[in-house]
Image 1: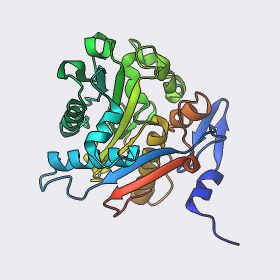
Image 2: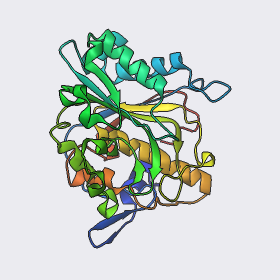
Image 3: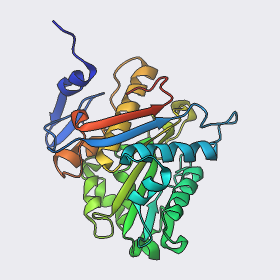
Length: 296
């Protein structure tokens, strides 16, 4: 018998159900998935992203982002790529994340702002925020959004990633907590958000792959992955990031150790809410740069 490929194993992984909840083991992906053409996701890494003190080198981050965008949009220059994201007529809100242990890197925020300015967006029409977006005049009139945050494990939702990053667009975030945040994709139907997101950037510089309890953080459970994942589909980007987190957990612990709680909101964003695709067969994953211990 021919051995199964890793992708085939993904699809054959056991999914245990309890009531309406889907329990996702390591690499378990429930189906069926949304139909449609493949969506491109770009993973780029650079072994020189962090200096000897563990700080991000701004020029390397900017270069990574620009190269990833060129690949995502199929163009040859950063200026062309940024014009695919926004233009002079746009008002752009950049939704970041300020969690004190693992915030969106300011070096990435600066690179995003620089790219938008080069595309002709007026400086006064750009705002980079996390909390307070509902009261921010730029976000209130935004024609375009860029969504960016680091990947980490999360007490309520399994992982905190791009889909969840829009929770501050609702004045009552706790209402999304039931059933391990299964329906976070509903956030993307809010009028302030709906159909405005041009770009998603999942930060994988030093991801957090394990923890327990609210607001947990232990540096032992981070590692220098030195990457970012970009795409126009937040579900596809999140699903690639989740596969890396799950692979790292297996590598670190020596066994398939499921996230607790499971990050089922990512797959339900596909199967229940049709926000995007989580199916590896429908994701055109492009990998660039440093390939050591890529995990996907």
